[in-house]
Image (cartoon, rainbow, N blue to C red; front, side, top):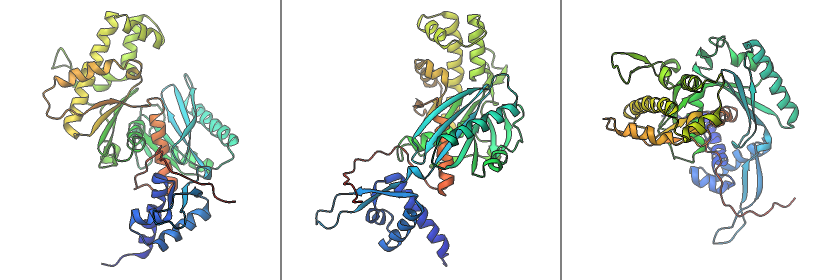
Length: 394
């Protein structure tokens, strides 16, 4: 077997950088041991990364029991640059700035109600320029997330009018000359659960997002599964038997989507807008009409989750839904309905830890992978390590 030396070198470079991102602060000798690479190779790659400014040295670690020189420890240099993650939703877009280590800040939500798509794109461009002006570091790339079907960075279908077949990545990539990554929101949520929950916690998971559409992001053996032309996880359009008349069928979106449920609640409360405080108050006050709507939602959602559990047998199913974040007590009802289903596999049902920012942070992770050249490798963010460091001498 002939091994291409260039490919081997590239592979080694990626693995060394991955070690520094995931395990830093870390020494060259520890990287060498972890990867079973000789110290000369690791030192050569380490020096190149240091010269490029992609990593930085932060102090000395503890010497071995045998004494000797204390190792110099290195971290990813978060001042090298930053990324943006933007979600385009039905009546707003949300934006988040992220460091290369996954730490986020400057979340913003901008209303686009009654605004056409061209104006929305101009608003997004203005907001990006504002972020650039506020940061001294370089913008390295950004991610767009939306409800729809995306394949090979192209929008094949979208919930928002005008976005289908629009080359959003090229539109903004040409304007700013940096990488743009497109993904649907469910896939972004799945990436978030994989990369921010801790190393190896979820190797097989399904993240279900409930917004205008009901979608599933699927991680299998640590990798995002998109299916044929990105069609995996488009569960909102699947038929679902009616609770009372099995011969009657509507789509999952009809029964479970946030839009459908909130419309019923607004009609019940005789309001023309969503009042989250009123919803919470009426729920705690046992308003029977509201409880009936939410019971229907829980019942149909349980049907969907039962099918997912049986079909994919994931380690867990993570739910990203504002209505469940508002009323987490509903999870007990959903679990109860799932328990009554005659299915062999009932995966744990969990609420995502950060519904508001989960998909945005998943998008940030996707673009961080891209700009670091680590698309095919696992990155674990927010990995806090207790390391004894001494300041480097200037």
